[in-house]
Length: 499
Image 1 (cartoon, helix red, strand yellow):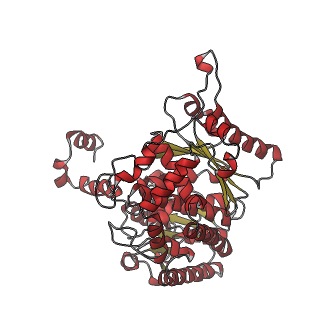
Image 2: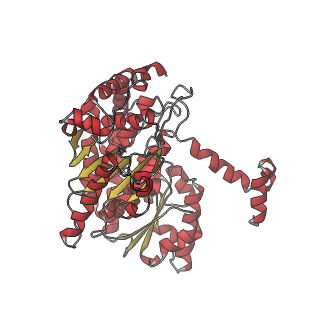
Image 3: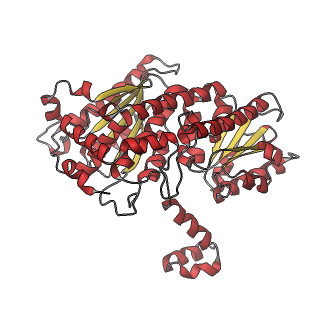
Protein backbone atom coordinates (compact mmCIF):
# COMPACT_ATOMS: atom_id res chain seq x y z
CA UNK A 1 0.00 0.00 0.00
CA UNK A 2 1.15 3.56 -0.67
CA UNK A 3 2.02 5.02 2.72
CA UNK A 4 2.23 8.42 1.03
CA UNK A 5 -1.56 8.59 1.27
CA UNK A 6 -1.08 9.11 5.00
CA UNK A 7 1.26 12.10 4.63
CA UNK A 8 -1.32 14.86 5.16
CA UNK A 9 -2.77 13.04 8.16
CA UNK A 10 0.54 12.13 9.79
CA UNK A 11 1.54 15.79 9.55
CA UNK A 12 -1.69 17.14 11.05
CA UNK A 13 -1.29 19.05 14.32
CA UNK A 14 -3.85 17.94 16.89
CA UNK A 15 -5.19 20.76 19.03
CA UNK A 16 -6.38 20.37 22.65
CA UNK A 17 -10.05 19.57 23.05
CA UNK A 18 -10.88 22.76 24.96
CA UNK A 19 -9.34 24.81 22.16
CA UNK A 20 -11.35 22.93 19.54
CA UNK A 21 -14.59 23.63 21.41
CA UNK A 22 -13.72 27.27 21.94
CA UNK A 23 -12.95 27.81 18.25
CA UNK A 24 -16.08 26.06 16.98
CA UNK A 25 -19.41 26.69 18.81
CA UNK A 26 -21.15 24.27 16.41
CA UNK A 27 -18.67 21.46 17.03
CA UNK A 28 -21.06 19.15 18.89
CA UNK A 29 -23.68 19.39 16.18
CA UNK A 30 -21.18 18.79 13.38
CA UNK A 31 -19.56 15.82 15.07
CA UNK A 32 -22.74 14.02 16.11
CA UNK A 33 -24.91 11.75 13.98
CA UNK A 34 -28.00 9.62 14.51
CA UNK A 35 -28.74 6.22 13.01
CA UNK A 36 -31.11 3.37 13.84
CA UNK A 37 -32.30 4.80 17.16
CA UNK A 38 -28.72 5.52 18.25
CA UNK A 39 -26.94 8.86 18.74
CA UNK A 40 -23.17 9.06 18.16
CA UNK A 41 -21.20 11.96 19.65
CA UNK A 42 -17.55 12.24 18.57
CA UNK A 43 -17.08 15.88 19.59
CA UNK A 44 -14.79 14.95 22.51
CA UNK A 45 -12.35 13.31 20.09
CA UNK A 46 -9.61 15.56 18.61
CA UNK A 47 -11.19 15.65 15.15
CA UNK A 48 -11.55 18.94 13.29
CA UNK A 49 -12.99 19.90 9.93
CA UNK A 50 -9.63 19.91 8.17
CA UNK A 51 -8.68 16.51 9.56
CA UNK A 52 -12.03 15.00 8.60
CA UNK A 53 -11.46 16.27 5.07
CA UNK A 54 -8.03 14.62 5.01
CA UNK A 55 -9.55 11.34 6.13
CA UNK A 56 -12.19 11.58 3.43
CA UNK A 57 -9.39 11.98 0.88
CA UNK A 58 -7.60 8.97 2.38
CA UNK A 59 -10.78 6.88 2.09
CA UNK A 60 -11.03 7.79 -1.56
CA UNK A 61 -7.36 7.03 -2.20
CA UNK A 62 -7.63 3.66 -0.45
CA UNK A 63 -10.63 2.60 -2.55
CA UNK A 64 -13.10 2.56 0.32
CA UNK A 65 -16.14 2.84 -1.97
CA UNK A 66 -15.02 -0.10 -4.13
CA UNK A 67 -14.34 -2.36 -1.13
CA UNK A 68 -17.65 -1.39 0.42
CA UNK A 69 -19.50 -2.24 -2.79
CA UNK A 70 -17.67 -5.56 -3.03
CA UNK A 71 -18.89 -6.41 0.48
CA UNK A 72 -22.51 -6.00 -0.54
CA UNK A 73 -22.27 -7.58 -3.99
CA UNK A 74 -20.38 -10.74 -3.13
CA UNK A 75 -16.95 -9.62 -4.26
CA UNK A 76 -13.72 -10.92 -2.76
CA UNK A 77 -13.05 -8.84 0.35
CA UNK A 78 -11.00 -11.54 2.09
CA UNK A 79 -8.11 -11.81 -0.39
CA UNK A 80 -5.87 -14.06 1.69
CA UNK A 81 -8.56 -16.77 1.64
CA UNK A 82 -10.08 -15.75 -1.70
CA UNK A 83 -13.65 -15.39 -0.47
CA UNK A 84 -16.40 -12.84 0.10
CA UNK A 85 -17.76 -11.95 3.53
CA UNK A 86 -21.22 -13.44 3.86
CA UNK A 87 -22.59 -11.89 7.04
CA UNK A 88 -24.44 -9.04 5.31
CA UNK A 89 -26.34 -11.61 3.20
CA UNK A 90 -27.72 -13.09 6.43
CA UNK A 91 -29.49 -9.73 6.83
CA UNK A 92 -30.65 -9.60 3.22
CA UNK A 93 -28.01 -7.04 2.28
CA UNK A 94 -25.71 -9.14 0.09
CA UNK A 95 -25.83 -10.33 -3.49
CA UNK A 96 -29.09 -11.83 -4.77
CA UNK A 97 -27.60 -15.32 -4.78
CA UNK A 98 -26.13 -15.04 -1.27
CA UNK A 99 -29.34 -13.49 0.07
CA UNK A 100 -31.39 -16.38 -1.31
CA UNK A 101 -29.03 -18.97 0.19
CA UNK A 102 -29.10 -17.26 3.58
CA UNK A 103 -32.88 -16.97 3.50
CA UNK A 104 -33.13 -20.72 2.83
CA UNK A 105 -31.05 -21.53 5.91
CA UNK A 106 -33.20 -19.16 7.96
CA UNK A 107 -36.32 -20.98 6.75
CA UNK A 108 -34.76 -24.26 7.86
CA UNK A 109 -33.85 -22.76 11.23
CA UNK A 110 -37.33 -21.36 11.75
CA UNK A 111 -38.87 -24.73 10.92
CA UNK A 112 -36.74 -26.31 13.64
CA UNK A 113 -37.65 -23.56 16.12
CA UNK A 114 -41.34 -24.08 15.28
CA UNK A 115 -40.97 -27.84 15.70
CA UNK A 116 -39.40 -27.42 19.13
CA UNK A 117 -42.14 -25.02 20.17
CA UNK A 118 -44.75 -27.50 18.91
CA UNK A 119 -43.32 -30.27 21.09
CA UNK A 120 -41.46 -32.36 18.52
CA UNK A 121 -38.60 -32.76 21.02
CA UNK A 122 -40.91 -33.29 23.96
CA UNK A 123 -40.86 -30.94 26.89
CA UNK A 124 -37.94 -28.49 26.48
CA UNK A 125 -36.98 -26.18 29.32
CA UNK A 126 -33.29 -25.57 28.68
CA UNK A 127 -30.73 -25.15 25.92
CA UNK A 128 -27.02 -25.82 26.33
CA UNK A 129 -25.34 -23.76 23.60
CA UNK A 130 -21.78 -25.00 23.03
CA UNK A 131 -19.32 -23.03 20.93
CA UNK A 132 -16.25 -20.84 21.32
CA UNK A 133 -15.22 -17.42 20.04
CA UNK A 134 -17.74 -16.09 17.56
CA UNK A 135 -19.81 -19.22 17.96
CA UNK A 136 -20.58 -18.18 21.53
CA UNK A 137 -19.88 -14.48 22.12
CA UNK A 138 -22.62 -13.08 19.87
CA UNK A 139 -25.46 -15.30 21.11
CA UNK A 140 -24.30 -14.81 24.69
CA UNK A 141 -24.36 -11.01 24.37
CA UNK A 142 -27.76 -10.85 22.66
CA UNK A 143 -29.51 -13.30 24.99
CA UNK A 144 -28.01 -11.68 28.08
CA UNK A 145 -29.01 -8.21 26.88
CA UNK A 146 -32.54 -8.96 25.72
CA UNK A 147 -33.60 -12.15 27.47
CA UNK A 148 -33.59 -11.14 31.11
CA UNK A 149 -37.34 -10.77 31.39
CA UNK A 150 -38.59 -12.65 28.37
CA UNK A 151 -36.32 -15.65 27.67
CA UNK A 152 -38.57 -18.61 26.94
CA UNK A 153 -35.90 -21.19 27.75
CA UNK A 154 -33.05 -21.38 30.20
CA UNK A 155 -30.15 -20.90 27.76
CA UNK A 156 -26.63 -21.58 29.00
CA UNK A 157 -23.60 -20.67 26.89
CA UNK A 158 -20.60 -22.98 27.26
CA UNK A 159 -17.33 -22.06 25.57
CA UNK A 160 -14.36 -22.75 27.85
CA UNK A 161 -12.88 -26.25 27.79
CA UNK A 162 -12.29 -26.01 31.56
CA UNK A 163 -14.29 -28.76 33.25
CA UNK A 164 -15.49 -26.29 35.87
CA UNK A 165 -17.08 -24.24 33.10
CA UNK A 166 -18.98 -27.33 31.97
CA UNK A 167 -20.23 -28.07 35.46
CA UNK A 168 -21.33 -24.47 35.96
CA UNK A 169 -23.16 -24.48 32.62
CA UNK A 170 -25.22 -27.61 33.31
CA UNK A 171 -25.91 -26.86 36.98
CA UNK A 172 -29.66 -26.67 37.46
CA UNK A 173 -30.52 -27.92 33.96
CA UNK A 174 -32.72 -31.00 33.62
CA UNK A 175 -30.96 -33.33 31.15
CA UNK A 176 -34.31 -34.87 30.17
CA UNK A 177 -35.67 -31.49 28.98
CA UNK A 178 -32.47 -29.87 27.70
CA UNK A 179 -31.40 -29.52 24.08
CA UNK A 180 -27.72 -29.27 23.15
CA UNK A 181 -26.83 -26.84 20.35
CA UNK A 182 -23.29 -27.52 19.10
CA UNK A 183 -21.87 -24.62 17.08
CA UNK A 184 -18.65 -25.03 15.14
CA UNK A 185 -17.91 -23.72 11.67
CA UNK A 186 -15.73 -26.69 10.72
CA UNK A 187 -17.11 -29.10 13.33
CA UNK A 188 -13.52 -29.89 14.22
CA UNK A 189 -12.94 -27.29 16.98
CA UNK A 190 -11.35 -29.30 19.76
CA UNK A 191 -12.77 -27.25 22.65
CA UNK A 192 -16.30 -27.44 21.26
CA UNK A 193 -16.24 -31.14 20.39
CA UNK A 194 -14.74 -32.00 23.79
CA UNK A 195 -17.60 -30.17 25.49
CA UNK A 196 -20.17 -31.76 23.16
CA UNK A 197 -18.88 -35.21 24.05
CA UNK A 198 -19.12 -34.29 27.73
CA UNK A 199 -22.70 -33.10 27.19
CA UNK A 200 -23.65 -36.38 25.50
CA UNK A 201 -22.14 -38.22 28.46
CA UNK A 202 -24.10 -36.01 30.85
CA UNK A 203 -27.33 -36.89 29.03
CA UNK A 204 -26.49 -40.60 28.94
CA UNK A 205 -25.52 -40.74 32.60
CA UNK A 206 -28.89 -39.20 33.47
CA UNK A 207 -30.72 -41.97 31.64
CA UNK A 208 -31.63 -40.12 28.44
CA UNK A 209 -32.21 -42.97 25.98
CA UNK A 210 -31.06 -41.20 22.82
CA UNK A 211 -28.55 -38.45 23.67
CA UNK A 212 -27.86 -37.74 20.00
CA UNK A 213 -31.58 -37.12 19.57
CA UNK A 214 -31.16 -34.07 21.82
CA UNK A 215 -28.25 -32.70 19.78
CA UNK A 216 -28.53 -29.98 17.13
CA UNK A 217 -25.48 -29.03 15.06
CA UNK A 218 -24.89 -25.56 13.58
CA UNK A 219 -22.00 -25.61 11.13
CA UNK A 220 -20.64 -24.67 7.72
CA UNK A 221 -19.50 -28.30 7.36
CA UNK A 222 -22.72 -30.34 7.68
CA UNK A 223 -21.05 -33.53 6.45
CA UNK A 224 -18.63 -33.36 9.41
CA UNK A 225 -21.55 -33.03 11.82
CA UNK A 226 -23.28 -36.05 10.28
CA UNK A 227 -20.05 -38.03 10.52
CA UNK A 228 -19.87 -37.04 14.21
CA UNK A 229 -23.28 -38.68 14.66
CA UNK A 230 -25.83 -35.87 14.30
CA UNK A 231 -28.91 -36.74 12.27
CA UNK A 232 -29.00 -34.66 9.07
CA UNK A 233 -32.47 -33.36 9.95
CA UNK A 234 -30.98 -31.69 13.01
CA UNK A 235 -28.08 -29.98 11.22
CA UNK A 236 -28.43 -26.25 10.55
CA UNK A 237 -25.89 -25.12 7.94
CA UNK A 238 -24.54 -21.67 7.27
CA UNK A 239 -22.33 -20.30 4.51
CA UNK A 240 -18.57 -20.84 4.51
CA UNK A 241 -18.20 -17.12 3.79
CA UNK A 242 -19.68 -16.20 7.18
CA UNK A 243 -16.84 -15.56 9.61
CA UNK A 244 -17.26 -16.68 13.20
CA UNK A 245 -17.19 -13.24 14.79
CA UNK A 246 -19.75 -12.06 12.23
CA UNK A 247 -22.01 -15.10 12.52
CA UNK A 248 -24.77 -14.38 15.03
CA UNK A 249 -27.06 -13.33 12.16
CA UNK A 250 -26.86 -16.80 10.64
CA UNK A 251 -28.08 -20.12 12.03
CA UNK A 252 -25.49 -19.51 14.77
CA UNK A 253 -28.29 -17.35 16.17
CA UNK A 254 -30.47 -20.44 16.65
CA UNK A 255 -30.34 -20.11 20.44
CA UNK A 256 -31.23 -16.42 20.14
CA UNK A 257 -34.33 -17.29 18.11
CA UNK A 258 -35.30 -19.98 20.61
CA UNK A 259 -34.76 -17.80 23.66
CA UNK A 260 -36.34 -14.58 22.37
CA UNK A 261 -38.73 -15.88 19.71
CA UNK A 262 -38.56 -15.62 15.95
CA UNK A 263 -40.08 -12.10 15.71
CA UNK A 264 -37.30 -10.77 17.96
CA UNK A 265 -34.65 -12.45 15.81
CA UNK A 266 -36.16 -10.86 12.70
CA UNK A 267 -36.09 -7.44 14.40
CA UNK A 268 -32.42 -7.99 15.24
CA UNK A 269 -31.74 -8.64 11.56
CA UNK A 270 -33.77 -5.62 10.44
CA UNK A 271 -31.90 -3.29 12.79
CA UNK A 272 -28.63 -4.50 11.31
CA UNK A 273 -30.04 -4.22 7.78
CA UNK A 274 -30.90 -0.56 8.37
CA UNK A 275 -27.27 0.12 9.22
CA UNK A 276 -26.19 -1.92 6.17
CA UNK A 277 -28.22 0.35 3.91
CA UNK A 278 -26.79 3.45 5.52
CA UNK A 279 -23.20 2.20 5.37
CA UNK A 280 -23.54 1.24 1.72
CA UNK A 281 -25.02 4.49 0.44
CA UNK A 282 -23.86 7.31 2.77
CA UNK A 283 -20.58 8.97 1.83
CA UNK A 284 -17.75 10.61 3.70
CA UNK A 285 -18.50 12.28 7.02
CA UNK A 286 -22.21 11.45 6.67
CA UNK A 287 -21.35 7.75 7.01
CA UNK A 288 -21.54 6.81 10.69
CA UNK A 289 -19.15 3.80 10.73
CA UNK A 290 -16.65 5.64 8.52
CA UNK A 291 -16.71 8.70 10.79
CA UNK A 292 -16.14 6.41 13.77
CA UNK A 293 -13.08 5.03 11.97
CA UNK A 294 -11.79 8.57 11.42
CA UNK A 295 -11.98 9.05 15.19
CA UNK A 296 -10.30 5.71 15.87
CA UNK A 297 -7.40 6.46 13.55
CA UNK A 298 -6.95 9.94 14.98
CA UNK A 299 -6.44 8.32 18.36
CA UNK A 300 -4.08 5.56 17.25
CA UNK A 301 -2.11 7.29 14.50
CA UNK A 302 -1.87 10.89 15.74
CA UNK A 303 -2.03 10.48 19.53
CA UNK A 304 -0.24 7.12 19.58
CA UNK A 305 -2.78 5.44 21.85
CA UNK A 306 -2.44 1.66 22.02
CA UNK A 307 -5.63 0.82 23.92
CA UNK A 308 -9.30 1.72 23.66
CA UNK A 309 -11.69 1.33 26.59
CA UNK A 310 -15.41 0.61 26.18
CA UNK A 311 -17.71 1.07 29.17
CA UNK A 312 -21.35 0.02 29.00
CA UNK A 313 -23.44 2.19 31.29
CA UNK A 314 -26.20 -0.38 31.20
CA UNK A 315 -26.02 -3.74 32.97
CA UNK A 316 -27.76 -5.41 30.03
CA UNK A 317 -24.76 -4.60 27.83
CA UNK A 318 -22.18 -5.95 30.28
CA UNK A 319 -20.87 -8.45 27.70
CA UNK A 320 -20.35 -5.83 24.98
CA UNK A 321 -16.65 -5.20 25.79
CA UNK A 322 -15.89 -8.93 25.59
CA UNK A 323 -17.77 -9.20 22.29
CA UNK A 324 -15.86 -6.22 20.87
CA UNK A 325 -12.53 -7.62 21.98
CA UNK A 326 -12.88 -10.46 19.52
CA UNK A 327 -14.55 -8.44 16.77
CA UNK A 328 -11.95 -5.69 16.76
CA UNK A 329 -8.71 -7.38 17.75
CA UNK A 330 -9.20 -10.59 15.77
CA UNK A 331 -10.25 -8.57 12.74
CA UNK A 332 -7.68 -5.79 12.70
CA UNK A 333 -4.85 -7.12 14.84
CA UNK A 334 -2.65 -7.53 11.77
CA UNK A 335 0.99 -6.91 10.84
CA UNK A 336 0.76 -6.88 7.04
CA UNK A 337 -1.33 -5.20 4.37
CA UNK A 338 -3.53 -7.00 1.86
CA UNK A 339 -0.44 -7.03 -0.37
CA UNK A 340 1.55 -8.91 2.26
CA UNK A 341 3.79 -5.93 3.03
CA UNK A 342 4.44 -4.63 6.56
CA UNK A 343 1.75 -2.14 7.60
CA UNK A 344 4.37 0.12 9.14
CA UNK A 345 1.96 1.71 11.64
CA UNK A 346 -0.34 0.80 14.51
CA UNK A 347 -3.42 -1.19 13.57
CA UNK A 348 -6.05 -2.29 16.09
CA UNK A 349 -5.61 -0.97 19.62
CA UNK A 350 -6.15 -3.28 22.58
CA UNK A 351 -9.87 -3.26 23.33
CA UNK A 352 -10.82 -3.51 26.99
CA UNK A 353 -13.50 -2.18 29.29
CA UNK A 354 -16.24 -2.97 31.73
CA UNK A 355 -19.51 -1.75 33.18
CA UNK A 356 -20.26 1.65 34.69
CA UNK A 357 -20.48 2.62 37.47
CA UNK A 358 -18.44 -0.33 38.77
CA UNK A 359 -15.47 0.63 36.61
CA UNK A 360 -15.39 4.14 38.07
CA UNK A 361 -14.26 2.62 41.35
CA UNK A 362 -11.64 0.42 39.72
CA UNK A 363 -9.91 1.57 36.53
CA UNK A 364 -10.95 5.19 36.12
CA UNK A 365 -8.08 6.33 38.36
CA UNK A 366 -5.72 5.40 35.54
CA UNK A 367 -7.97 6.94 32.89
CA UNK A 368 -8.05 10.31 34.67
CA UNK A 369 -4.55 10.53 36.12
CA UNK A 370 -2.46 7.68 34.73
CA UNK A 371 0.54 8.19 32.49
CA UNK A 372 -1.07 6.00 29.81
CA UNK A 373 -3.74 7.82 27.80
CA UNK A 374 -6.56 5.56 26.64
CA UNK A 375 -9.58 6.88 24.73
CA UNK A 376 -12.91 5.90 26.24
CA UNK A 377 -16.17 4.95 24.55
CA UNK A 378 -19.28 5.31 26.70
CA UNK A 379 -22.32 3.26 25.64
CA UNK A 380 -25.59 4.11 27.39
CA UNK A 381 -29.35 3.74 26.94
CA UNK A 382 -31.89 6.53 27.54
CA UNK A 383 -34.85 4.34 28.52
CA UNK A 384 -34.66 1.73 31.25
CA UNK A 385 -36.91 -1.26 31.81
CA UNK A 386 -36.08 -2.23 35.38
CA UNK A 387 -38.69 -1.82 38.07
CA UNK A 388 -36.67 0.49 40.27
CA UNK A 389 -37.23 4.17 40.90
CA UNK A 390 -36.06 6.43 38.06
CA UNK A 391 -33.35 7.75 40.38
CA UNK A 392 -31.18 4.70 39.62
CA UNK A 393 -31.15 5.23 35.88
CA UNK A 394 -30.86 9.00 36.17
CA UNK A 395 -27.72 8.66 38.28
CA UNK A 396 -26.34 6.03 35.90
CA UNK A 397 -26.64 8.34 32.90
CA UNK A 398 -25.40 11.40 34.77
CA UNK A 399 -22.30 9.44 35.79
CA UNK A 400 -21.61 8.44 32.20
CA UNK A 401 -21.89 12.00 30.93
CA UNK A 402 -19.91 13.42 33.86
CA UNK A 403 -17.01 11.03 33.27
CA UNK A 404 -16.68 12.17 29.66
CA UNK A 405 -16.75 15.80 30.74
CA UNK A 406 -14.18 15.22 33.48
CA UNK A 407 -11.81 13.37 31.15
CA UNK A 408 -11.90 16.31 28.76
CA UNK A 409 -11.74 19.29 31.12
CA UNK A 410 -9.66 17.90 33.98
CA UNK A 411 -8.88 20.16 36.97
CA UNK A 412 -5.85 22.15 38.01
CA UNK A 413 -4.44 22.04 41.53
CA UNK A 414 -1.29 23.10 43.32
CA UNK A 415 -1.31 19.60 44.78
CA UNK A 416 -0.13 17.31 42.01
CA UNK A 417 -1.95 14.33 43.53
CA UNK A 418 -5.22 16.23 43.10
CA UNK A 419 -4.54 17.57 39.63
CA UNK A 420 -6.29 16.13 36.58
CA UNK A 421 -4.58 16.85 33.24
CA UNK A 422 -7.75 16.65 31.16
CA UNK A 423 -7.65 16.66 27.36
CA UNK A 424 -8.39 12.93 27.45
CA UNK A 425 -10.55 11.85 24.51
CA UNK A 426 -13.87 10.03 24.66
CA UNK A 427 -16.90 9.28 22.53
CA UNK A 428 -20.47 8.57 23.56
CA UNK A 429 -22.96 6.20 21.95
CA UNK A 430 -26.49 6.73 23.26
CA UNK A 431 -29.31 4.32 22.40
CA UNK A 432 -32.92 5.48 22.66
CA UNK A 433 -33.82 2.08 24.10
CA UNK A 434 -32.40 -1.42 24.14
CA UNK A 435 -34.49 -3.76 22.01
CA UNK A 436 -33.72 -6.27 19.23
CA UNK A 437 -33.78 -3.61 16.52
CA UNK A 438 -31.43 -1.13 18.21
CA UNK A 439 -29.08 -3.88 19.38
CA UNK A 440 -28.92 -5.24 15.83
CA UNK A 441 -28.12 -1.74 14.60
CA UNK A 442 -25.42 -1.25 17.24
CA UNK A 443 -23.64 -4.52 16.44
CA UNK A 444 -23.79 -3.91 12.68
CA UNK A 445 -22.33 -0.44 13.27
CA UNK A 446 -19.37 -2.00 15.07
CA UNK A 447 -18.87 -4.54 12.26
CA UNK A 448 -18.79 -1.86 9.56
CA UNK A 449 -16.56 0.35 11.69
CA UNK A 450 -14.04 -2.51 11.74
CA UNK A 451 -14.14 -2.72 7.95
CA UNK A 452 -13.77 1.05 7.56
CA UNK A 453 -10.68 1.03 9.77
CA UNK A 454 -9.25 -1.92 7.85
CA UNK A 455 -9.68 -0.29 4.45
CA UNK A 456 -7.99 2.92 5.58
CA UNK A 457 -5.11 0.89 7.03
CA UNK A 458 -4.91 -1.38 3.98
CA UNK A 459 -5.38 -4.63 5.93
CA UNK A 460 -7.70 -7.64 5.68
CA UNK A 461 -10.21 -7.79 8.58
CA UNK A 462 -11.69 -11.14 7.58
CA UNK A 463 -8.88 -13.63 8.16
CA UNK A 464 -7.47 -14.67 11.54
CA UNK A 465 -4.37 -16.78 10.98
CA UNK A 466 -2.95 -15.58 14.29
CA UNK A 467 -5.52 -17.77 16.05
CA UNK A 468 -4.30 -20.91 14.32
CA UNK A 469 -0.69 -21.09 15.53
CA UNK A 470 -1.63 -21.63 19.18
CA UNK A 471 -4.16 -24.31 18.21
CA UNK A 472 -1.59 -26.10 16.07
CA UNK A 473 0.97 -26.07 18.86
CA UNK A 474 -1.61 -27.23 21.42
CA UNK A 475 -2.16 -30.33 19.28
CA UNK A 476 1.56 -30.90 18.85
CA UNK A 477 2.37 -30.42 22.51
CA UNK A 478 0.10 -33.34 23.40
CA UNK A 479 2.29 -35.67 21.32
CA UNK A 480 5.38 -36.83 23.28
CA UNK A 481 7.19 -37.36 20.00
CA UNK A 482 6.78 -33.67 19.19
CA UNK A 483 7.77 -32.23 22.54
CA UNK A 484 11.49 -32.10 21.88
CA UNK A 485 10.93 -29.23 19.48
CA UNK A 486 9.50 -27.06 22.26
CA UNK A 487 11.63 -24.76 24.38
CA UNK A 488 13.03 -25.95 27.77
CA UNK A 489 10.62 -23.79 29.76
CA UNK A 490 7.57 -25.30 28.05
CA UNK A 491 8.87 -28.85 28.45
CA UNK A 492 9.53 -28.22 32.15
CA UNK A 493 6.01 -26.91 32.67
CA UNK A 494 4.52 -30.00 31.01
CA UNK A 495 6.60 -32.21 33.29
CA UNK A 496 5.70 -30.27 36.44
CA UNK A 497 1.99 -30.49 35.60
CA UNK A 498 2.29 -34.24 35.16
CA UNK A 499 1.16 -34.17 31.53
